[in-house]
Length: 89
Image 1 (cartoon, rainbow, N blue to C red):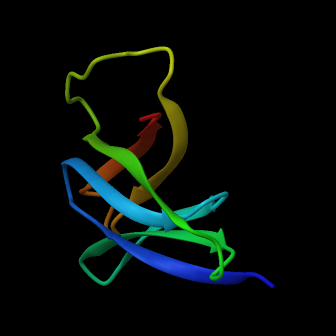
Image 2 (cartoon, rainbow, N blue to C red):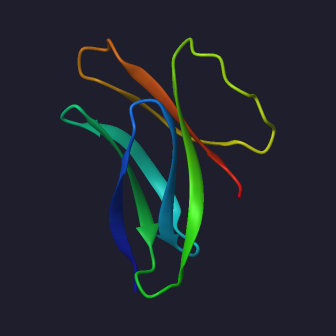
């Protein structure tokens, strides 16, 4: 069985989430003024740590090859755009 879970994200910086093993991020978006990541998960699976980076447009960051792009999110007025990457732990 699978479910879609929401994980709250910071507006900038890094965050570690405990997610069920094998979780697949499927979307990143603003919900109101809050940034969230949605993932398809197996609720019965053991949890593992996952590291995400939230980077604002124009912000300098380490362009590590192992970073995997997850998605881009924009506030409705387009004034705030962020990009989410995952770094393997």
